[in-house]
Length: 141
Image (cartoon, rainbow, N blue to C red; front, top):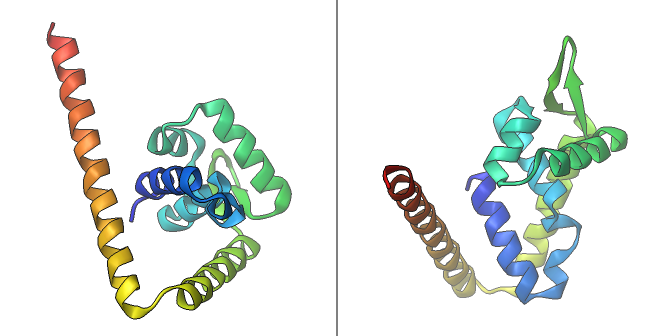
């Protein structure tokens, strides 16, 4: 699942369930996941992908840098990569999330949850397509 979809799902879940707005589903976590997946990432790339302001992403990245979870690439001030500490944190969070899911859901409900996430992904893709169509119509008007 891409970072933008994960972020959109996190936003929807946090509105519906107060316990899901914790550290595992925070924007910082989504940024860490994105940096891990991309290998090397820039603030502008994160900003565009998650539809966040550069200022907001810079604040998030600054916090992650201070925490030692990401680091700047030597010789390139705009590129970020995950540190070993950041990687361990993500692994730990995934294990915690998996244990929580296993303790709260049966196999059948896990299959239902997978279908729900697939539907969320399709909905997000549909919304993205609608937004792109509107942009084309606006530019041609």
